[in-house]
Amino acid sequence: MSRINKNVILALLTLTSSAFLLFQLYYYKHYLSAKNGASLSKHKGSRVGFDGTQWRAVKKFIMLTSSQNVPVFLIDPLILELIDKSFEQVKNVSHGSTSECKFFCVPRDFTAFALQYHLWKNEEGWFRIAENMGFQCLKIESKDPRLDGIDSLSGTEIPLHYICKLASHAIHLVVFYERSGNYLWHGHLRLKGHIDKKFVPFRKLQFGRYPGAFDRPELQQITVDGLEVLIPKNPMHFLEEVPHSFIECRYKEARAFFQQYLDDNTVEAMAFRKSAKELLQLAAKTLRKLGVRFWLSSGTCLGWYRQCNIISYSKDVDLGIFIKDYKSDIISAFQDAGLPLKHKFGKVEDSLELSFQGKDDVKLDIFFFYEETDHMWNGGTQAKTGKKFKYLFPKFTLCWTEFVDMKVHVPCETIEYIEANYGKTWKIPVKTWDWKRSPPNVRPNGVWPISEWDEVIQLY
Image (cartoon, rainbow, N blue to C red; front, side, top):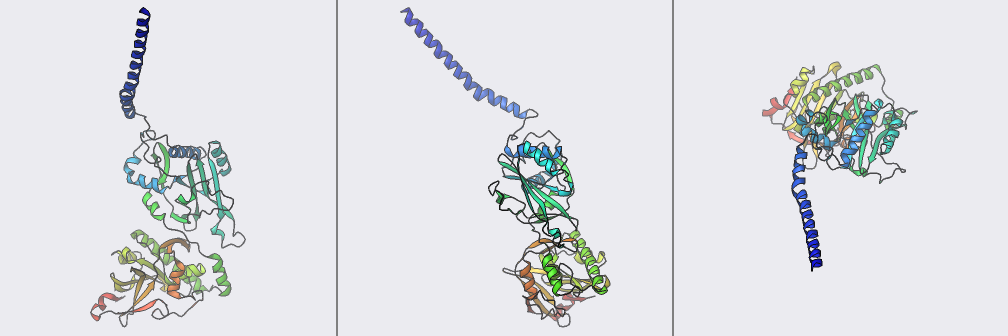
């Protein structure tokens, strides 16, 4: 009997102890841990989200570049856009004061940085240290397009992109090069046969699908998610340039053109090219100050594409502007820049055309383009008769190029644009040109009512 009582008592004690232990575990899990977690999250120095692979990869990359004095700057479109939306808040954050990872922890496959290549002093040593830190790095090279005009150097390869992978996240380092127009250029990322196509999801890269060009950005240092980084001082201006591809001048074709048609190097031709270049630079400066997009049009566009130069017998500079970008102070802005209005044809809602007088009898013609459902057009007006003309173009987008030491826009669909204006024989120089009959895309467009002539035909 006593033995049974002892066993019962022992079982009861064991059961009671187990129940008490379970109660302690339950209490700790549902009360104490929640309470302690809440107090820890409020405690200074708490780090929420900083254990993600993206943030760790970025942190290691910044440590690597800082230790080697490699001045990279952040160009990732997603991160820059987020920073720009919270810019006032971000720029006031001090190093180490961030408690939550809001930017570099955003889910993505890549983080993009840029580097001006001439500032990279120890590339090989940088790679060795990167590998010791756990990065797997891929270097992508291609030919330098700046040397295409020099036979002995054409085909020389330069580094264009670096992909450095850490675990499941990769850093895309885009290499920027200075161009003669005082802007920065990066090349197309082309995967050669020996490169592992599965190294990273290349199709998700934001940079490298096509070459790009950017105004040289002023940089500023800020703290993002506890990390000190350089970013463009005007992030939105930088981002606005990202979608525009870059088209190189066709140097080889230009050399072939001048082998067939000798270049005009007379004193008069060289003087015209110099004056036309100065006029184009002044026009570009004026329009950029206004915030108005423009592109090389008509004979100026043909000269760029066919011979990488200004056509010596064209006698003017031609620019195109979308009518939606028109600003009412455009005439006064050019006049303030020293370019008096020569004539104004049409009106804003129909066939507007402006012409300004540059020095040495070189004029600037600006054609405004109107968009229809399936095409674009610009207008022309004959001053003596009031006849209207319409020049039809297939729809086009704008790309960057370099022309006479300037970064300027041209139609991306260049061949279609030029053939619309000059036909299939555009490669053959034509010195006699009737703007009312010669272009294959010209169409009659009625006549201005005499009652409107004072408004739509203004000669100065």
